[in-house]
Length: 471
Ligand SMILES: [Zn+2]
Picture 1: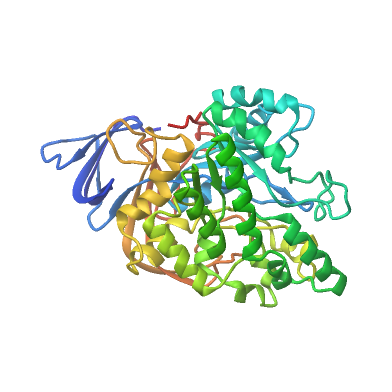
Picture 2: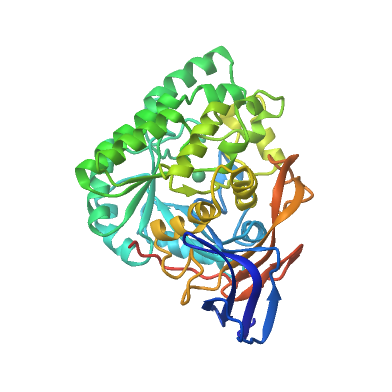
């Protein structure tokens, strides 16, 4: 582990709204100075001529050690973290399901165990609550105080047979909770300084369509998408905004996918409700046309892919701040697992491997095509996630005193994403054939060079749990 000083010289540094030719001096794990630094020497000098110097990206939405519909995901703290690092991500926030009958905070022990000897980048975790009991409500302040200020819940995934505790898809305990549960939960969460993350899709809309489709034998990937129309997302957001208005607890909409959903987020914001939204690269790159393919199951997830008109509106919203964060919702399975649901979405584990392409996609489709600026790229992938999820001021910006999480990005390289060129652990990639401009060249995590071109240098276990606190 390198504890010496490093001078990153000659690059184009992005700090806040400034894009400038500057040098970055790193001492140990920390950024010491940013500026011209003409007379400054260091133990090591890194030539960043022609490269962008960006803060390490933060991904507040990844699923490591995930099990979905009986299938085990392939990204854990090493494989997922390595792919994240190759994509310029230096901190992630994972999810952990509440363990019934145990304190909510025990999820942190589970994740620490999974991270031990494995984590290569820094991490935090969002507990998922799927049963709101008096014990859980009482425990909320302690969970926030322990550095887990963001809790996730679902407005979808429940039984269609009336057994609310059983998920219709997985046969396992369902994840949906009631609107009154949301009120009970967000009252102490808001008071404790926490934030609620919500998977906002309304089950009353989805389940009726799904039942009808299943009865007709319409169960392919495109049918799955048609079960989950934009109206379902919009209606759920409207409901949760009502909860946030009542309790004052900040609410964050994960994986916003639709124009209608965006409309509800915007209306709530204009109403003074503390609400934020993220979207994900797959919504900007793929449309429902991919779901109509023979191998459409590779893109199956909830909420589903939409259309080109939606993509342009999502870009506009990323540009003007109606959407605050670009996260990945990485949920990586093997092809064999996805194939289990090729003919029937009920058996298809949801999501796609996506932890790696985010920064490059945002540069290539965003900055290089003039849709967003470089400072906006940094805001959406690093600064806003750091601020909203409580990594600030240590992470998310290249400021003296911050962790030296630094990405050197080459904006001139043209390449094609494929199973061969990406580093994610699935044995297929949904991004096969996607042509991009720009590539991560080097990644430093707390001053340590962990990615150098195609070389991965991080020692498994070096990644740290970062207790977070919302500002
Ligand atoms: Zn997710």
